[in-house]
Length: 365
Image (cartoon, rainbow, N blue to C red; front, side, top):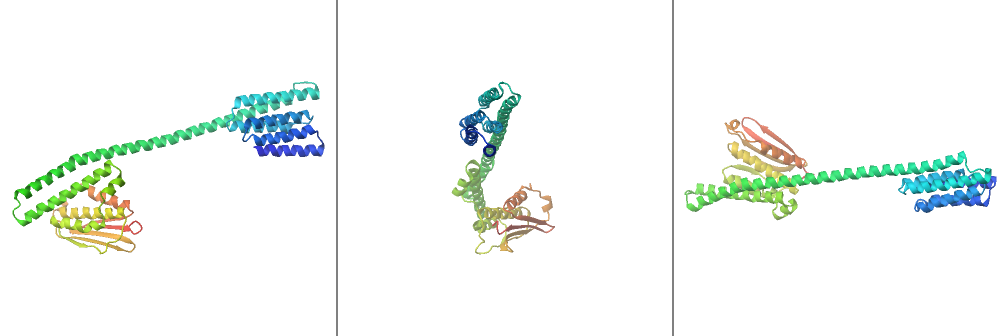
């Protein structure tokens, strides 16, 4: 906006030089141009300079149409950027009306001029339009701020509800699984102490059951810490299982009577923590299903090939396996875990063999 005003003043000065003009006319044009530039940083000083330049140009007995136009542009610019519009517009319109009246009296001997009235109205319109644009801008900013506040509030509410749900799940885990597992472990300990397990095979089974329940208690406590506290802090204080724990996992199933033919490479492939715990849980779920519903030896193969990490678990099924129904949550959880690390799960079921095939790309591992 000031550049248009300055350009208009330069054109006016050049025209005055060519056609001839007074010193006051030149001075008024220059002051008006300077005021238009200054108005960007000092609105009141700028509009005052523009009005002064317009008065000087008018007293110089020249047509000050360009100066009146600059007054309107400058007033529009400063009111559109937040300068109080009412007083500034009223004052500017009053000064312009005075200049028009003085010019009409000096040139024609009459104060009222229709063209002068149009100039005053243009100044009032410029101030009103600038103020309206500023108010519209403020309204849009207020709407944007409210929208941002709503998003933040929604996120806070969602976080609060998630935290409440985590606490509820933690409480249920503690009250149900944790308590009942502790009771089972206590009874197993009583059997071991009382000497009821007389033969070595029964004693080994009791010991394996105690180890399993202690492991359940440990992992339940870890889950409770994750649910009730910061997940990263909990993971640091109690590391999650990974590929390095695979041999111990296979032994735990062997101790409860499941024969496992494990083909695990040495050294084990390097994986991220997320992939490590995913593979561990997949194998754990697959071997649990093999122990519950299978018959005979389960086969576990873990290897890296063709740019991916592959896990295969197969086991023969019992003749009555179709009559045994699980919840299906284990398979669902397995698929969700693998998908979260960019992998795929394929499950093959026929009359004799149940097989789980998992593939995780190397860039994820």
